[in-house]
Amino acid sequence: MKISIISFDLGNNCLGRAYLLGKVLSRHYDVDIHGFVFPYSGNKIWKPCDTNEFYYKVIQGRNFPFFLKSMTDMIRSINGDVIYASKATLPSYGVALLKKFFSLITFKCIFGLLFFSKTSIFYHSMSFFSRIFF
Image (cartoon, rainbow, N blue to C red; front, top):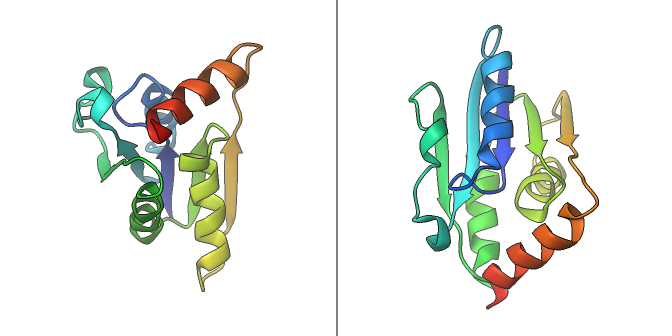
């Protein structure tokens, strides 16, 4: 069984959650990690997780409305039987749900790993959307 993990930004420390989940799951399953890289992170994978342990499917992130093309590219690249989405954001959980909606095959399951703190909901959404829209 193949598992695809989606991280909304491969160039930032949020990749750490997906990376650790991938390490655990790779003991028994074939795992790949999908995500976007953005210019503000240098268009590269976050250094501490760039260990060549996983296949990273890197999609170039763009500002809206061009981000919709990036999302389409991501949806086409996901090929796991099970999809884990790290954080409830449009570029991760939203992509996983769209993959399920537009796919002709039935997935065994889609998991959304929801991580919230009191400040993360406001801070992360504002900083992420300000990077995309402006």
